[in-house]
Image (cartoon, rainbow, N blue to C red; front, side):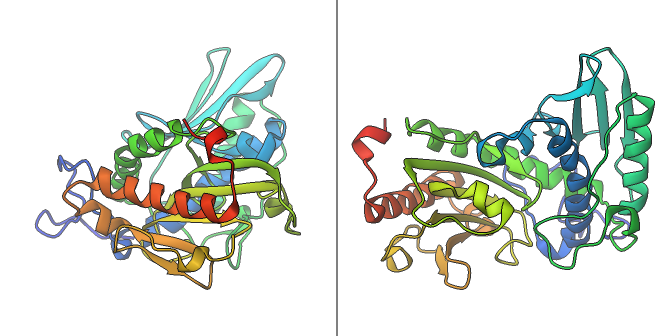
Length: 310
């Protein structure tokens, strides 16, 4: 966790007007790791209290004017539950449709303590739920109720992360709107901890992966774009693009901008967030990456682009 803020060295000044804030991984790494686990605690509620939608879209969070929020969940007794991470006032708000509300401070605390606080808040709301406490999509997972390793939370770092998502969201939205085939919402997955949007050809995948998560996610041909704030397939905060299954020749395709690269070990193109943030037009830089990677993948995979694109 970061120590006491020094105005001269703090990379995330609270009053910074920059719409694309800096997000150095060294500064926010510990907060990121803890917040990832906290979002998984809340994300497991969506697994337990909502029916499975295609490609797990039911479990994803929505980006809001305050932070990240679940969709509506069944709280029992005809009630609805939502949970919101508020990165302005730094609270987790759990609310039910009968007007009841519980909040938990987003402040330095272990994952075990956070998990206990969430379960206690749910009991106070009379929401009966059993959660599988093992994190997913991470190396060396620790059960929520046993995790005393992750305990950092710097509000300035969390706020900068959220503001970065807000800055890039219009580009994701504009890119999504150019496609009239099956397409995911722009949403945030708490397992892989990324903002993502996915386009589909309409054809089933010839070979479906074995894993439970992968089998549902990649049941159909897909081209996905998104953003990892650090800790994904590459260490630095970066945008990504990939196709499942990957068409022959995709890894050697000429992609723009020039700061993008192909990560062969993961089968993805990546574009560093810092390269986008510092570009003369971050929005144009990011859209160029999205469009060039999509066009290469769709062309090489033989998608019916005339039927799928606006």
